[in-house]
Image (tube, rainbow, N blue to C red; front, side, top):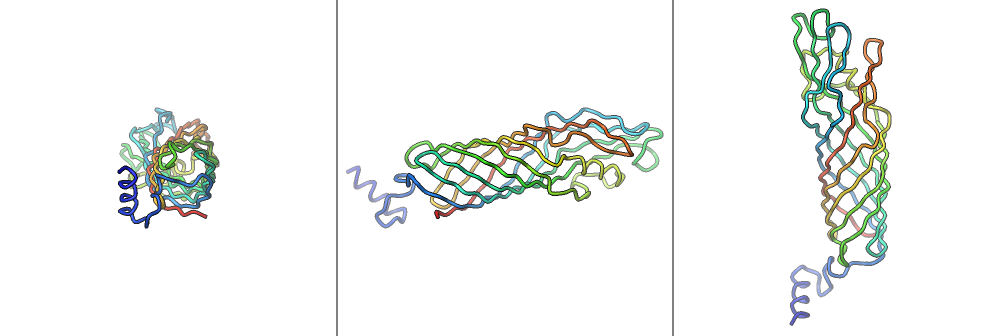
Length: 239
């Protein structure tokens, strides 16, 4: 009776009598795939405040940033273990920073006040991950591994949340602050179907994304540790 039920289930899944993926997965296989998704960006070590030219300061406003991500990957499976090198594009907007001007300050039109800004950084992330599948079906898995994120450039454009009254000089200084490279540790859980997969991953910044900020001829310590929670969906095929 059990065999008949499993056979009927396989037929219902459109496998024409073959066991559905997840019941009898290959023990040795190589896959290629792509994934896209969104993420939340956390910066728990953002500075509370740095003093800028006379009467001005920049302070973390709190909250979270956002990012869009896309990746191309190769999965080499041997039994329940697999290796997964990948190349990822990450476009990140930080949480807001508040820039305040007092008497004699620089960057906000006369009358003083405050404005908000954020940095936007585009990264190319090269990861070398490995993982383990839970069960012979190899559909549910965990993965872990290091990655290096290299900054692609600085556009100097305002983040969507930036106040229009903010000085271009201040905005550009913040936007140019992310460093040239960042070391990360990625770990996550996912589901790997026959061709479609979903994954939740946490990218932990082992080194800060921002170390200092250069403004008006001076360099200021401006450490920002950036971590991200990524939710992605992907499509893959077996080689």
